[in-house]
Amino acid sequence: MPVKHKRIIRLAAKLILLSAVLFYAFIYMMERPGGLTDRRMSRALGQDSILHIPLGKTPDTAVEQFRGPSSMHVIHREPVSGGTLLFMKRPYQAGSHNLQVEYVRKTRIGWKWAWGGGYGIGESSQSISALNYMGMPELDHLSTPFPMVFGDILDPSIKKVSVKIKGKGSYNAKLTAVEAGKMIWFVFLPSPASTPFDIEGWDGEGNLIARKTITDPRDSGSVHFEMDRH
Image (cartoon, rainbow, N blue to C red; front, top):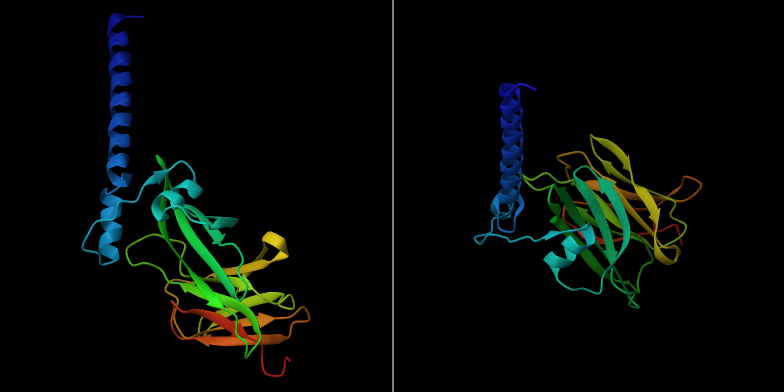
Protein backbone atom coordinates (compact mmCIF):
# COMPACT_ATOMS: atom_id res chain seq x y z
CA MET A 1 0.00 0.00 0.00
CA PRO A 2 1.38 3.44 -0.91
CA VAL A 3 2.67 5.55 1.98
CA LYS A 4 0.19 8.30 1.11
CA HIS A 5 -2.77 5.92 1.50
CA LYS A 6 -1.45 4.68 4.85
CA ARG A 7 -1.24 8.25 6.11
CA ILE A 8 -4.83 8.93 5.00
CA ILE A 9 -6.05 5.79 6.78
CA ARG A 10 -4.18 6.70 10.00
CA LEU A 11 -5.57 10.24 9.84
CA ALA A 12 -9.10 8.96 9.31
CA ALA A 13 -8.73 6.56 12.27
CA LYS A 14 -7.52 9.41 14.51
CA LEU A 15 -10.43 11.61 13.45
CA ILE A 16 -12.93 8.83 14.19
CA LEU A 17 -11.37 8.25 17.61
CA LEU A 18 -11.36 11.99 18.37
CA SER A 19 -15.01 12.28 17.31
CA ALA A 20 -15.98 9.38 19.59
CA VAL A 21 -14.11 10.92 22.54
CA LEU A 22 -15.75 14.31 21.98
CA PHE A 23 -19.18 12.70 21.60
CA TYR A 24 -18.96 10.80 24.89
CA ALA A 25 -17.48 13.84 26.61
CA PHE A 26 -20.55 15.81 25.52
CA ILE A 27 -22.88 13.03 26.71
CA TYR A 28 -21.08 12.96 30.06
CA MET A 29 -21.43 16.74 30.47
CA MET A 30 -25.14 16.37 29.75
CA GLU A 31 -25.90 13.40 31.98
CA ARG A 32 -23.41 13.58 34.86
CA PRO A 33 -24.88 14.42 38.31
CA GLY A 34 -25.47 18.16 38.32
CA GLY A 35 -24.92 18.35 34.55
CA LEU A 36 -26.92 20.10 31.87
CA THR A 37 -29.85 17.66 32.05
CA ASP A 38 -30.14 18.08 35.81
CA ARG A 39 -29.97 21.87 35.45
CA ARG A 40 -32.81 21.76 32.92
CA MET A 41 -34.93 19.64 35.26
CA SER A 42 -34.20 21.93 38.20
CA ARG A 43 -35.41 24.93 36.20
CA ALA A 44 -38.54 23.05 35.08
CA LEU A 45 -39.35 22.25 38.72
CA GLY A 46 -38.72 25.85 39.80
CA GLN A 47 -35.93 24.89 42.20
CA ASP A 48 -33.25 27.37 43.24
CA SER A 49 -30.64 24.65 43.81
CA ILE A 50 -29.44 22.23 41.15
CA LEU A 51 -30.42 18.57 41.40
CA HIS A 52 -27.59 16.03 41.35
CA ILE A 53 -29.20 12.86 40.00
CA PRO A 54 -26.85 9.83 40.06
CA LEU A 55 -26.35 7.41 37.19
CA GLY A 56 -27.07 3.73 37.79
CA LYS A 57 -26.13 0.55 35.97
CA THR A 58 -29.78 -0.61 36.06
CA PRO A 59 -33.14 1.17 36.45
CA ASP A 60 -33.47 -0.27 39.97
CA THR A 61 -30.09 1.05 41.14
CA ALA A 62 -30.76 4.43 39.53
CA VAL A 63 -33.92 4.82 41.63
CA GLU A 64 -32.22 3.56 44.79
CA GLN A 65 -29.28 5.93 44.38
CA PHE A 66 -31.60 8.90 43.93
CA ARG A 67 -34.31 8.02 46.48
CA GLY A 68 -32.05 6.32 48.99
CA PRO A 69 -32.49 2.92 50.70
CA SER A 70 -36.13 1.90 50.94
CA SER A 71 -38.37 -1.01 51.88
CA MET A 72 -40.16 -0.64 48.55
CA HIS A 73 -39.73 -3.39 45.95
CA VAL A 74 -40.48 -3.51 42.23
CA ILE A 75 -43.69 -5.34 41.29
CA HIS A 76 -43.81 -4.48 37.58
CA ARG A 77 -41.55 -3.05 34.86
CA GLU A 78 -43.12 -1.36 31.84
CA PRO A 79 -40.91 -0.40 28.87
CA VAL A 80 -41.70 3.05 27.47
CA SER A 81 -40.11 5.32 24.90
CA GLY A 82 -36.77 6.51 26.24
CA GLY A 83 -36.64 4.23 29.26
CA THR A 84 -38.82 2.23 31.64
CA LEU A 85 -41.43 2.65 34.36
CA LEU A 86 -40.93 0.88 37.68
CA PHE A 87 -44.06 0.21 39.74
CA MET A 88 -43.12 -0.28 43.38
CA LYS A 89 -44.81 -1.18 46.67
CA ARG A 90 -43.99 -1.22 50.35
CA PRO A 91 -44.74 -4.37 52.36
CA TYR A 92 -48.47 -4.73 53.01
CA GLN A 93 -49.85 -3.01 56.08
CA ALA A 94 -53.39 -3.72 57.24
CA GLY A 95 -55.76 -0.83 56.63
CA SER A 96 -53.75 0.91 53.90
CA HIS A 97 -52.65 0.63 50.27
CA ASN A 98 -49.64 2.14 48.53
CA LEU A 99 -48.17 2.29 45.04
CA GLN A 100 -45.25 4.22 43.56
CA VAL A 101 -44.20 4.72 39.93
CA GLU A 102 -40.73 5.85 38.86
CA TYR A 103 -39.68 6.82 35.33
CA VAL A 104 -36.03 6.02 34.58
CA ARG A 105 -34.35 7.23 31.38
CA LYS A 106 -31.85 5.12 29.46
CA THR A 107 -28.78 7.16 28.53
CA ARG A 108 -25.62 6.12 26.68
CA ILE A 109 -23.71 6.00 29.96
CA GLY A 110 -26.27 4.44 32.30
CA TRP A 111 -29.77 4.80 33.71
CA LYS A 112 -31.01 8.02 35.27
CA TRP A 113 -34.09 8.75 37.40
CA ALA A 114 -36.29 11.30 35.65
CA TRP A 115 -39.60 11.61 37.52
CA GLY A 116 -41.97 9.74 39.80
CA GLY A 117 -44.42 9.76 42.65
CA GLY A 118 -46.86 7.64 44.56
CA TYR A 119 -49.62 7.42 47.13
CA GLY A 120 -50.53 5.87 50.44
CA ILE A 121 -54.29 5.56 50.98
CA GLY A 122 -56.11 4.29 54.04
CA GLU A 123 -59.10 1.98 53.75
CA SER A 124 -62.52 3.54 54.29
CA SER A 125 -64.87 2.03 56.86
CA GLN A 126 -67.90 3.85 55.41
CA SER A 127 -67.78 2.84 51.72
CA ILE A 128 -66.41 -0.01 49.63
CA SER A 129 -63.61 0.97 47.26
CA ALA A 130 -63.24 -0.60 43.84
CA LEU A 131 -59.81 0.81 43.01
CA ASN A 132 -57.26 3.47 43.92
CA TYR A 133 -55.75 6.03 41.57
CA MET A 134 -53.19 8.79 41.17
CA GLY A 135 -52.57 11.24 38.32
CA MET A 136 -49.07 11.93 36.96
CA PRO A 137 -49.16 15.08 34.79
CA GLU A 138 -46.54 15.85 32.20
CA LEU A 139 -43.64 18.20 32.97
CA ASP A 140 -43.14 21.33 30.91
CA HIS A 141 -39.98 21.26 28.75
CA LEU A 142 -39.09 17.71 29.86
CA SER A 143 -39.64 14.51 27.88
CA THR A 144 -41.53 11.86 29.90
CA PRO A 145 -44.20 9.23 29.13
CA PHE A 146 -46.71 11.27 31.15
CA PRO A 147 -49.53 12.32 31.54
CA MET A 148 -50.70 9.06 33.03
CA VAL A 149 -53.18 7.78 35.60
CA PHE A 150 -52.37 4.63 37.56
CA GLY A 151 -53.48 2.70 40.61
CA ASP A 152 -54.26 -0.66 42.16
CA ILE A 153 -57.47 -2.67 41.83
CA LEU A 154 -59.05 -3.55 45.16
CA ASP A 155 -61.99 -5.71 44.10
CA PRO A 156 -61.76 -8.70 41.72
CA SER A 157 -65.09 -7.81 40.09
CA ILE A 158 -63.30 -4.94 38.28
CA LYS A 159 -62.26 -6.34 34.89
CA LYS A 160 -61.79 -3.09 32.93
CA VAL A 161 -60.74 0.46 33.82
CA SER A 162 -61.04 3.45 31.52
CA VAL A 163 -60.48 7.19 31.69
CA LYS A 164 -63.01 9.33 29.82
CA ILE A 165 -62.01 12.89 28.90
CA LYS A 166 -64.83 15.11 27.69
CA GLY A 167 -64.30 16.04 24.06
CA LYS A 168 -61.31 13.70 23.65
CA GLY A 169 -62.74 10.22 24.09
CA SER A 170 -62.22 7.23 26.35
CA TYR A 171 -58.87 5.54 27.02
CA ASN A 172 -58.67 1.96 28.26
CA ALA A 173 -56.16 1.17 30.97
CA LYS A 174 -53.74 -1.74 30.90
CA LEU A 175 -54.42 -4.20 33.74
CA THR A 176 -51.41 -6.18 34.95
CA ALA A 177 -51.22 -8.97 37.51
CA VAL A 178 -48.55 -8.47 40.16
CA GLU A 179 -47.62 -10.14 43.42
CA ALA A 180 -50.04 -12.47 45.23
CA GLY A 181 -52.60 -12.26 42.43
CA LYS A 182 -53.17 -8.53 42.88
CA MET A 183 -53.77 -6.21 39.93
CA ILE A 184 -52.54 -2.74 39.04
CA TRP A 185 -53.78 -0.52 36.22
CA PHE A 186 -52.34 2.39 34.26
CA VAL A 187 -53.32 4.42 31.23
CA PHE A 188 -51.36 6.96 29.18
CA LEU A 189 -53.36 10.04 28.23
CA PRO A 190 -52.96 12.46 25.31
CA SER A 191 -50.84 15.55 25.85
CA PRO A 192 -51.95 17.83 27.28
CA ALA A 193 -54.52 15.93 29.34
CA SER A 194 -57.37 18.13 30.48
CA THR A 195 -59.61 17.93 33.52
CA PRO A 196 -62.22 17.07 34.52
CA PHE A 197 -62.08 13.43 33.50
CA ASP A 198 -63.91 10.32 34.72
CA ILE A 199 -62.28 7.15 36.00
CA GLU A 200 -64.62 4.23 35.32
CA GLY A 201 -64.55 0.64 36.50
CA TRP A 202 -66.42 -2.11 34.64
CA ASP A 203 -67.29 -5.69 35.54
CA GLY A 204 -66.85 -8.76 33.32
CA GLU A 205 -70.31 -8.33 31.79
CA GLY A 206 -69.59 -4.77 30.64
CA ASN A 207 -71.53 -3.03 33.40
CA LEU A 208 -70.26 0.27 34.78
CA ILE A 209 -70.02 -0.38 38.52
CA ALA A 210 -67.62 2.34 39.76
CA ARG A 211 -66.97 5.91 38.68
CA LYS A 212 -65.39 9.11 39.95
CA THR A 213 -64.89 12.54 38.37
CA ILE A 214 -61.37 13.98 38.78
CA THR A 215 -60.79 17.74 38.66
CA ASP A 216 -57.11 17.86 39.73
CA PRO A 217 -54.57 16.16 37.39
CA ARG A 218 -52.32 15.45 40.42
CA ASP A 219 -55.11 14.01 42.55
CA SER A 220 -55.03 10.63 44.28
CA GLY A 221 -57.68 8.69 46.15
CA SER A 222 -60.21 5.89 45.86
CA VAL A 223 -63.02 5.16 43.42
CA HIS A 224 -66.04 3.68 45.17
CA PHE A 225 -68.71 1.38 43.81
CA GLU A 226 -71.90 2.94 42.46
CA MET A 227 -74.64 3.18 45.09
CA ASP A 228 -76.73 0.40 43.53
CA ARG A 229 -73.77 -2.02 43.46
CA HIS A 230 -74.08 -3.16 47.09
